[in-house]
Amino acid sequence: MKKSITWLAGFSIMAAGLAFADAPKIDSQRINVMLKQYERQMQAQPGAPAPNKAEIQKEITLRLQTADILKAEALKAGLDKQPDTQAAWQNMQAQFYAAQYVDHLAASIEVSDSDLRRQYQQVSQEINLLPIVFPSEQAAEEGLSKLKKGLAYETLLKQVNPEAPQSNWMNPQQLPPEFAQLASQLKNGQISPNVITIDGHYILLKLAGTRQAPDAPAFDQVKEQLRNQAKQEKVSQQINQILKNNGINLNN
Image (cartoon, rainbow, N blue to C red; front, side, top):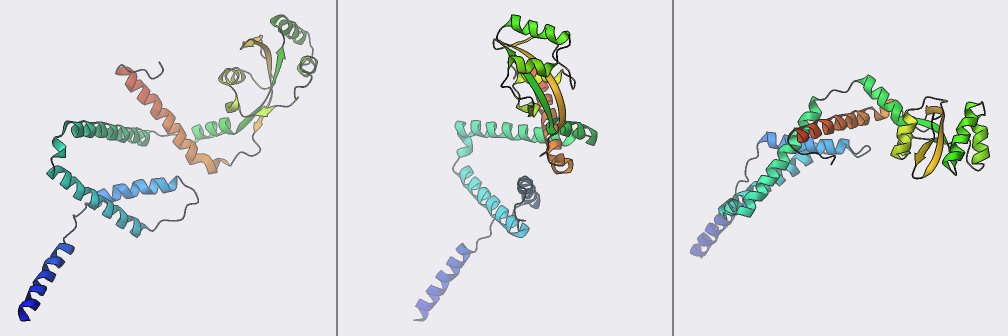
């Protein structure tokens, strides 16, 4: 009986040793980096409940420990020597450093509040753009001649397009690119100086008014969103220039 008890005790000790093997230690900097990534993701979700930081750190630690253990097993199996694995690692490494450089550029760019104000005015602005569509180029030229002689634009609009609305408020960003460019060249109350031809249509335009959109959010509500957008635009410009200097033109 004593031998059996001794054997069982020895087995229990062996099992306990296997069950309570030390998990790999994870450097706190690695945990903090992943925690910051998680916090940025949460900041991009307004209204989300506040996370339990201790629980998140615990989950991150477990995830990194698991990865380190499986990495060690992969190296034991010689996977790092396989050509496909090496190529995949080079691809991941290049993509990782590219993403780090994008973040570096974004962090180095400063956007002033005055720039943000101008950007806010653009995105929150509405314009009252009134087009007159003519059946032919000759009719359009005749209409333009009448305007130059003093005919009111709205009167000509009723004559040529009687069903067209007299008020047509919209965000310029909703316009097709050709119309948006033309509208940006007009001052408030101004009529296009020449007949415009787009997709076989003969058109005159009038910018009849500008205003802030009634449902536009307050500047402070979208300030940081606008800042991020401005930074992304500047980063894209810098990256496009770097690529162009190295023989890649994304615009082609």
